Amino acid sequence: MTIETIVKQALQDGYLTPVMETEVGRICDTASELSIEEYMALDRLMGALLTGEVVAVPRKQFINVMEELVLTESITRVAEIEQSSDRVLDVGDIAAYALNRLPPLYATTEEGARYQRQRAKEALHELITQQVMEAITQNVDHPDFGSERAALGKSNGTDVLRQVSSLLQVYAPNYEQKSPLPDLD
Image (cartoon, rainbow, N blue to C red; front, top):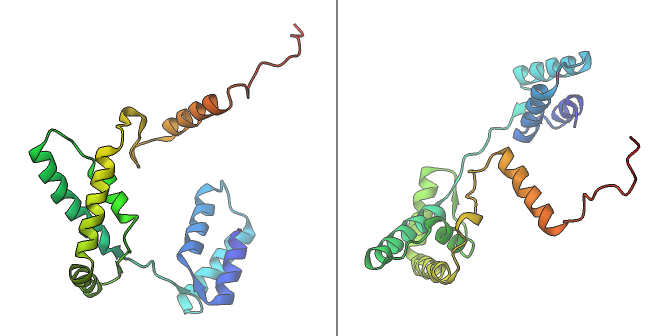
């Protein structure tokens, strides 16, 4: 998408969405130099925003209350197990497993979050406990992957390239074979 296309769409709709705003920012950040048309489109957009002809849609902040409830339950159960045994459990794996089997409880305000917490305590506490216990059972029965696993957010670009390279070597070992043509030296 071009800046001109985004501005045209914003003027037509009367709104500049967060996605449109992000795309304009990305284009401006990656371009070595903007064209006169792009500068004119940005100027038109700025004028439209200042006059109210186009309204910037704010980014919505929200939380999934279920995440905090499951995490709290997971930590409590894992602590009990680790205290009475030599087993070390991964709280993140347990919480993710349980969350994938529970309904989300999103809220956009503190009042909404309180409502969702109260609703979950009354109607979903048993289900939350059941899913966390099932997650623990799966975690205990699951083999330890050790160093093969990389936590989210812990890798950099080099790690990703190394992982892709390893996958290609395993699944396509003959992909980059030497050319059958003789050297012309």
